[in-house]
Length: 155
Image (cartoon, rainbow, N blue to C red; front, side, top):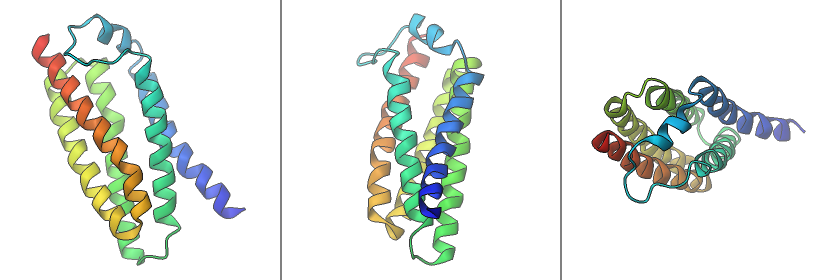
């Protein structure tokens, strides 16, 4: 029962981060839709769907790390990086959508990408499954970087 509760908490945390960030950057998707878009830009409805899936995967991965039998120092290090990347992730939509700081947002996204890579490597040392769950996140943030840079360049 305790592990089930922990799993639910681990999933709710990144989802809550995403919801709060979305609320703080409200109206941004409408503005985004009006901007010149780079090729391969997906429709606006896809973003919340993808982010919801990614946040759930993050939560499951963090649960796998927290419940592993790895060394507590390795778990602490990985979860510290996880928390940091989640905080950096939280601010990106605010910078991009709310403040329209497109180039700064791109640099911020590169920082996030590096943190995700480091976190994925740390997760891999503890749980290969947790690390594999982060691959879609890394791929999506790579694509988001392309979109972000394209929006800055075209607008």
